[in-house]
Image (cartoon, rainbow, N blue to C red):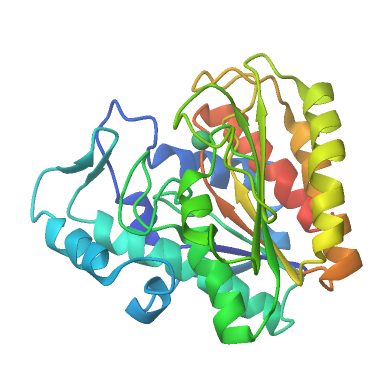
Length: 307
Ligand SMILES: [Zn+2]
């Protein structure tokens, strides 16, 4: 098997209310589409383990982990920020979301698969060291990248965040760690209203205006991200894989389509092939139009799996 597909039953139990766009239905839409596209049986399926506290501590403060554990309600919803709340199952989902990303790193580093996709909830890229925000509690992709550095001895990893929102939490976590490059494309000005002027030698932020379509996106990615990735020579690549830039997704105002997500995936795979023995771990972030999300994830995974 070329590609691992990692998920966990707790991801479907984290539910912030019927009105909330970050819903369990997102994962069901992905699952449905993988079956419809005859991809499901072509993947190595694994159930995510619970992340160890020591793995979270690489990117989160101990006091923050304690705070999240203490906030877990026995019934109803407990709000962590205006957009992010916990139900009685959220704590387990959050631990298993980070754990799934760690598992993907281990599977890829052991050579059991070339790459892996983690179909997790809650998402992670807005979570900072000590703050939940924007539907995110633990920063799953950051936990995974830190695991690759600490547990597998890699010297350089790169995260490509193509969610329509800036990966502010990931940037904040790795701001002072030049071993981790973040390349983030995002609608600007837009939530979380940062990232346009915080670039550094290893933080590559590409703000793009509302209305950005595939051709403009690809030009910017080719000009601003690819040379930086090539020069960095990452030994493993991560995707913060958000699909809310799809033209059918009304969370934001990009005009990307499935073919653009295939193209982005191919660019990441090219860098991985040249520098990282093909190693890629892709972690689900946003994507809220259920049909567009399912189709886009299927296209992304089909590309990863070279099917
Ligand atoms: Zn997003």
